Length: 173
Image (cartoon, rainbow, N blue to C red; front, side, top):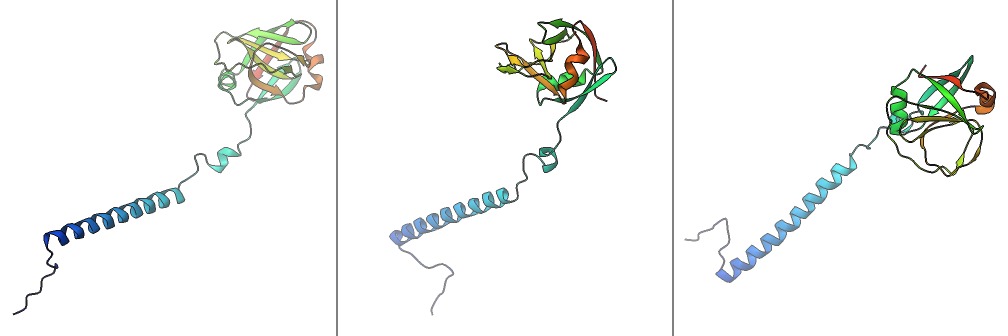
């Protein structure tokens, strides 16, 4: 009588070789499976930011001096976001050097100061942690500032600010 088994009968040496082949095959299948999982998860991964967030327009604010209103494009900085959160805000700004108006805030803002090299008319910058500065002339500077924003059309800024101290109101609307 012939007996058939589901598993072939191996000698101890053959069994050892067969076990090694099985381990190698399983390891290879495991690598293929991990690669397939990794590929499928990256193939369907969502971008870190949505397209809407990538095309979002810059933040806007307004600066009112007397009867003149100027649009401001706020910088993408923590200081600019904190400044916007404090609005509406009216500041009595003092004249300095014939090229800037400045005023101190009650609360400090976060800083990421850098030397801009050239200050441009319309720059809205933070000096230190509390001093808001509006520049109405273009010149070279070696001081460090944190960018808050830029007046969109600074052509009439010099006339609106005048030569003395002035009240400036910043608002989101």
